[in-house]
Amino acid sequence: MSHDGLTLVTGATGFVGCHVVRKLLARRERVRVLARRQSPLQVLQGLDVERVTGDLTDRESIRQAIEGCRWVYHVAADYRLWAPDPSVLYQANVEGTRNVLEAARAARVERIVYTSTVGAVGIPHNGAGPGNEATPVALQDMIGHYKRSKFLAEQEAAAAAKGGVPVVIVNPSTPVGSMDVKPTPTGQMIVDFLNGRMPAYVETGLNLIDVEDVAEGHLLAMEKGQVGQRYILGHQNLTLKEILEMLSSVSGLPAPTVRLPRAAALGLAAVSTGLSYLTKRPPRIPLEGVRMAGKKMFFDSSKAVRELGLPQNPVEEALTKAVAWFRQNGYVK
Image (cartoon, rainbow, N blue to C red; front, side):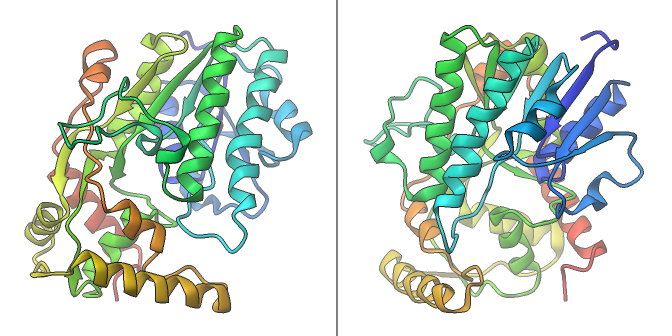
């Protein structure tokens, strides 16, 4: 990419977005961000970015943010496994994506990278190996509103690409690392581990990747990705037990040894999530998370490695960075 254009990043105050912004600035790109008035801006503190206040449901703010931009990274999403009113997830993720794509089309943006999720990618039903970009999948395979909304949003991006909008789709797996301010559900799991609030674990699996590699994957997709194609930005497939053992070795804390049977985990999650509707606070054990854990979320990211040059830095190092960041920033009691 040349340096004489302006790049818009949505979701710049989020976990992946703030790393995308940093990578762009390191390349001396001019960056504009679209951020909500209430967004936590500490992750952008001291960074030379232009800010437009608005959100994904406000078309006028999106139009202003995209005006004069050559490139758009649409990273923003409402990522929650529980919401008191699920319709807000569809407004942000589906309608918001449609709004960004329409504004980008009207502004004749050169290229858009849309951030989807591996949650929208299929996993072989017979357990035969990891899922890849071509594994068949349908809306009814999506567990919960977050995944459903992201699946529908990705369909918007794919349809826009077919209609001539220059969109490349990336599907990050489970990023870990520093600056997970919110934190994400995976970051919360690491925080719970560090605070000794994880007495047991369930049998499941995730594909982990350093969040900095995910951010680099976005820039590589902008540069080398094929319009209309999707790229899984992932690295290592690990069972939850292996992840907890890795966390134990980098943190010096013991890993839980009790494996919770699935039925017990579902029962606890149902109670925890039921209480949330009364307290209006997110559940300690989200039911959607436990239902998703029924399948190992294992994926094959070789297409992104081959076609984009996606880096594959050691997952242990990413977990080490996450642990150090959470400890330094007051998340650990």
